[in-house]
Length: 289
Image (cartoon, rainbow, N blue to C red; front, side, top):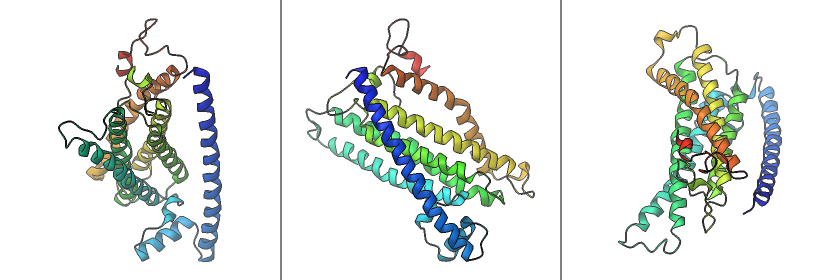
């Protein structure tokens, strides 16, 4: 595939992405306006407070968690999303293991690259969409109670971080990438049959969006822990869970920029290979470094 055709595909897909994002934003504003009107009719200051109290009284989950911008609703989003991706990635893992029942597997005969696709999708989705998603879900849902947070000041930012994160996971799922979860070149730059590798660049965009969403969410959670705690919860009395979340997110923010920069360089290599190709002084090993 030529660089021109690849650039054309990227432009078309990005155009679809912007259309989808605009539609999602329009639907969000519509639903949010309706919820604000309902809350106002019931003499509530904001819709998040009204529907949070309603959820407590009924004890049932609803789609309002995907619209409200309080921390507990955002936590429920992450938890529900992580469960969905857990079953998707788990299905991929079951298919791989079923194929290994026979001494000479026939399920992927003459199309072994499909096994590579399942391995890649299984590992990436399990790590970044289930493990990381469930961790953020627990952090957003539990920390406001543990720290007695009175006001969610950055709920809109956390909400957008979630949608960026989710869209990145969808891109990973649609990319049919066969690069494994570490994205090492030159494997990531190779094109394979049955669609594997042809959309590796989409997987790189998806991973970059996942990291951007996680980085934004990490900053908001760190700010919640440090600045938004209740006055009767000093740093010395914070629960161990909050300390664990705090230092984990600090370590992520310290390391994420290097991975994000490497992914940008890898994405550029699809159009003009100069960073990790092994020519003109470049080395694929530098990606791992």
